[in-house]
Structure formats: structure tokens, C-alpha cells
Image (cartoon, rainbow, N blue to C red; front, side, top):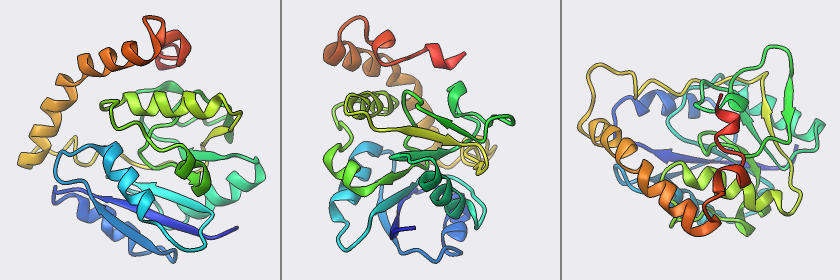
Length: 214
């Protein structure tokens, strides 16, 4: 498959060293972007995308996840075979369409992906950066909707599951983790307000949320 670069978001919590260990097993080049503690994930990703130079066709965004050495290879192969513009490994997400489906190998035409570990065409992401004015989970829905208007295909790869709970479930939480948990709850109202401001009161139906969340 065409050249892929990994954009790894650095986390302050010591558990992130487990992600680093996974990254060090990859043959693809990796660039690291500091999230600055509990700073905006959208801003960190955009900053990373803008910093990428060179002849790369795809970018794999890696946050605080654990994955197998062949996960990226599976994503690459299935993305090519299914003619997708962005694909996400299945995981224990809040959203049903991102959870592991043991029957369907590749779920295509999903309304949005989380920016937890998506493999995306670099040109697509450079043309459609994340909305940094959209708090927390709002940028997932917003980005998915904006690219869907241009008929790009988003998919979920059920053959390449990842883990995304090692920081959240740690009983010995780092100070940054505790702040992150408080912010997660506190920003829900702000996220909904931002979605109403941008898309109107009917945003949940327009952006296919929370119908996918059952």
C-alpha cells in the first residue's frame, strides 16, 4: 500500500508508555505530538497533520490505545480492498457502530469515526481538519458529517480490534487522568451547545447521533 505515516499523540500519564511500546514495533515512520496534558485533542491532531511533510498518502492517528503489531497492516489492506477513505479499528466504543461485529468483517458507510485510531487518506485530512471550536466528542460527529457531504467513505474494520481503556480503568489514577475525567463530564453541555450553534436544534438527527449509540 502507499506510504503511511503514524501520528502519535503523546499523553502525560505513565500508562502511555504501553502505547509507545506498541509504536516502537512498527516499521512505519512515527511523529509525536504532545497533547499538553488535557489540551484539545483536535488542536493536537491538526498541529500534527500540518507538520507532516514528505510523500505520504495515509496517516494513522494513534492516541492512548494498545494494538497488535499487525493492526496497521490489516487496516491498510482492508482499506484498499474496500475502497475506503478512512477506516477505524473496532473497539469498546460508546457508539454501537464502532464496536466489534463478529459477523461483518468490514462495516462501511458509518456516519462518523472517533479520532481514537483512524487510518485516513492524508489529503482528505489536510482538506478537512478537525473543528477546534467543537469541544470533546463533537469533533467526531462534525468531521464525519462534513466529509460525508462530499461522498467520502468511512468504515470500521472488525478484523483489527484495539484496546482503549488502560488509562481510564486504572485504579491508581495520575493527576492528569483525574482532571481528564472531570473535564469529560463537564464538557458535555458545552459540546451540545456548540453542535446546536453550528447545526441547529436538529443536530442529533442530522449528524446521526445518538441513533447509533444504542
